[in-house]
Amino acid sequence: MSTDAPPPAKETHKLPTTEEFTEVQESAEFGELRRSYRSFAFPLTVGFIAWYLLYVLLSNYAGDFMGTKVVGNINVALIMGLAQFLTTFLIAWWYARTAAARFDPKAEAIKSRMEGGA
Image (cartoon, rainbow, N blue to C red; front, side):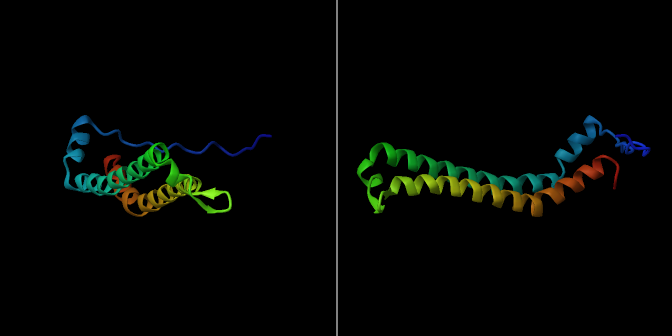
């Protein structure tokens, strides 16, 4: 099936020079974006890795504790294992929400300025 409509026009953007990239990288606005991203992402990553390692260490060295039955055949190890999946999805959701609200608008403003849009 074909249409008579022309293909969508491609937007042309000015390509920044190396000097412009360096200037933006050294700017206070970019530094603030980088700081806010790192202050969110790094502690969250360290916390999740610690949580994961706790699960692995308990599985290896605290078998009696992990084998403790909670309800029926459900034990502590199963609950903690499922909690690993839950925390993974919660962290991904939290990151996406935070990035859309805090990081993406700042990054888009920097990008549009570099491409000559502002």
